Image (cartoon, rainbow, N blue to C red; front, side):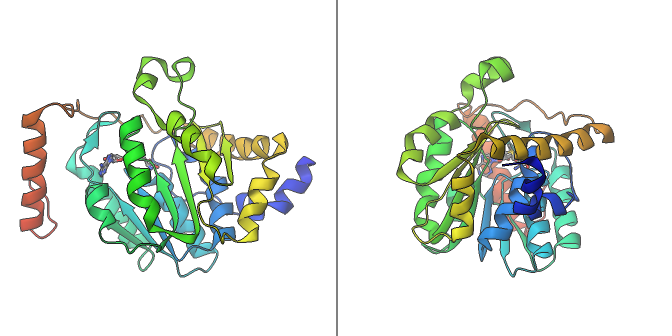
Amino acid sequence: MAETNLDARFPWAARLSPERLKSPWWIGHIPFAFELVARLRPGTLVELGTYSGSSFAAFCQAVRACGLDTRCYGVDLWEGDVHMGTFDEELFREVSQYMSDTYPGIATLVRKDFDEASRDFADGSVDLLHIDGTHTYEAVGNDFRTWLPKMSRRGVILFHDTNVTVQNAGEAALRFGVRRLFDEVKGRYPHLEFGHCWGLGVLVTGSEAPPEVLELVAAAQDPAFAAHFAAKGQAVSERFEAMGIPLPVHGTYPGSGSLAARAANRLRRLARRLLGGASPA
Ligand SMILES: C[S@@+](CC[C@H](N)C(=O)[O-])C[C@H]1O[C@@H](n2cnc3c(N)ncnc32)[C@H](O)[C@@H]1O
């Protein structure tokens, strides 16, 4: 595949420029996200782990640019996790304001635990699922098993962080189990994978996925495919770097073993519900 042909072959990756870049960890996959949404034309898209919204906004941007009537749901407790630390309430306020201002009628934020949110979606109803929550083997396995029945016959699942290693991330990588989980399940479905920007696994779980999506899987056999999307992603990452946005710093996460922390989180959730979505200080 000659480089000049690839922009013509994957036009949405070349055509759109990301509107929201808030953190560096996912944004190298935005060009592929644009291309995938344009080809899959999902009716329902769910993201598990929205945080400050870089990936979620990219999906919403593609939906609008392609003129689709996709409903996009960004699920997150906006409390933090073992990898990210504990979030300040301002994070949720800012992202929810941005999404309602920028993507009304497209974006809905769901402030729930992933398991709890799964009960809001009918079996067979989700066309595109992005799993980007807690990245331990146990958590990502639970997300996959819980949401797999929700996937439609056209379904595609994305897994972020398939390429977090001790070499590229140091000791923190020891907590990441996405690589192991993806290796366990990928043989059951057509799939492809990117190594850049901490890795993205793409699993075509639906038995009736559009040919345009299966064409991506076939194209990925050629190393020029991954190189093309890595170069596109690198350009996004360089743009982000030039913006000079400092890396977000969050509080220490108390740890899943802390009973006091879990009780405090439960109380915060209950208070939010009682206050009708508003958050206690
Ligand atoms: C890596 S961040 C997501 C990054 C985001 N996709 C982006 O583009 O920047 C993971 C998010 O998942 C959320 N999270 C982790 N486990 C969760 C769970 N079980 N239920 C709800 N949210 C969870 C965290 O609060 C955090 O915001």
